[in-house]
Amino acid sequence: MDYYGAKDLAAAFRTVRKNTIIIAEEIGEEHYDFRPAPESRSVAETLIHIAVVPQAAHHIHGTAHISDLAKLNFMEFFGPRMALEKKPHTKAQILAMLHEEGDKFAGFLDTVTEELLAERVAMPPGMEPSHKTRFEMLLGPKEHEMHHRAQLMVIQRLLGMKPHLTRQIEARMAAMQAAKAAS
Image (cartoon, rainbow, N blue to C red; front, top):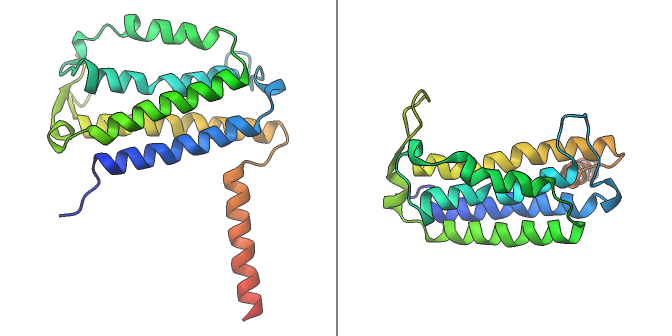
């Protein structure tokens, strides 16, 4: 039976990260301090956040192989990563971080077994559902990145830019319309 497995997770994550990196490259470094609202992350902070969040999934499902999230000290793990977002970084440093961390996580996903994907992990008390499969949880970093990438695409619009994915769709639509008109 053909199904969506670890190799598919890795390929999909690589595609999402590639598109995030294109956005990071297209936004000028002079705009990396831009915040769409006072309490929101800046462009730089958002990109750093995107870069390091997959470390949690790698830690939970790979390095530490945690089966009960109640045993994970979230602030001990996320505190240093949250502090990293607030430190100044150049555009080049952020792009390097996106590449490096993306490659690490996709490489980890390439090694995941069907057995690992099927394992169930207990959520902290009070969370629903009370358990999730590692497969569902390993989809999370990609979904998380797409959420923040959408924010960056809105920021591109606020900065007067047209996101590359929009440009690609418009080009495909124009090509289809031209082909239809020619027939």
